[in-house]
Amino acid sequence: MKRAAFLLLGLLATAASAQRTVNVGLGYNPDVQFTPFYVADKLGYFRAEGLSVKFQHGYVSQLLPLLLQGKLDFVVGDPEDAIFARNQGADVRYVMTMYQKNPVTVFSLSPLSGPESLKGRSVGIPGPFGSSYHAIQAVLDSANLTEGRDVRLNSIGFTQVDAVRAGRVDAAVGYANNDVLQLARTSGKKVYTLDVTDAYPMVGVGLIGTGKSLTGDLARKVVRASQRGLKFTVADPARAFKLAQPVFGASGSLDVLKASVPLMTGPYTQANGLGAMNPSAWTKAVAALVKQGKLPAGAKASDYYSNAYISKTLK
Image 1 (spheres, rainbow, N blue to C red):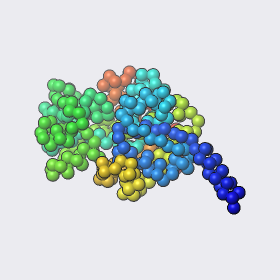
Image 2: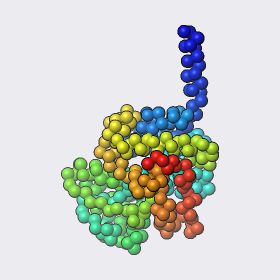
Image 3: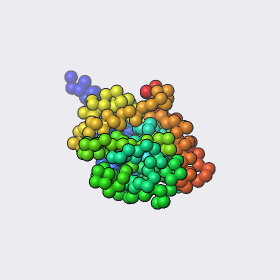
Image 4: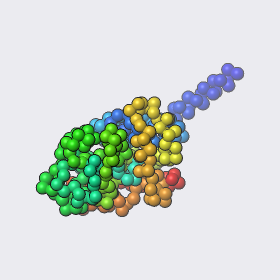
């Protein structure tokens, strides 16, 4: 009996020691938007790949240096974070997206009939940075509108909902799966949105790795576990929310997760797997950044992302 018990303990110790630790940086604070990753951990998807995952939260501007120093293996951030870092010489690449469609949108309590309807209006933005800024710039370019002359962009921090509700700005750039829901709930009024996809069809947040973490089989394992978390979340958002809620607490909303799920799938994922990225969308989005002067004229979308680590069977 004792010998059997020792053998069992030995097997468990060996299994534990065989687990490789992988460190993943998640932006900001624990948040409902990271539910697929929390679910992948809770349900043992990382463990099934021989991995012990450790999440570290913080601003992406803090996490990316840790990624480059090798203190993190992956960071979940905007595709632009990978694009601009690589453009400055960093050995990084974007390898899996959570959102097929960027949740960034322009929203208002007044009707928005298209990009042209922004002429003469004030639009609140967090600041001249991030995916929201690049998206609104692309929207203005698509309608031949000029910042300052035709549309006033006001930097208001992350107060978009309050600013629109109080009338301090005519519209704001925020998230369809969060800010729009908040404004509708707190104002009791209809919220109008302007889809930015035609002008800027960039994907949403996802996994960014380095040359080191993308060498060998680590990236495929991390991506596969994350894809399984996405699949579970898409199939049963209510259960996924319940599993992940101990991580983000009362700050998370099931409504936000339910609004996020449709952004995680699309025609491209049905053929190529959850988390895969449409090359034509990337090409158009990178072209918009080139037009804005954010990237050199010769920039190629394929330099910044890769679908090579995606499991096509996880749809």
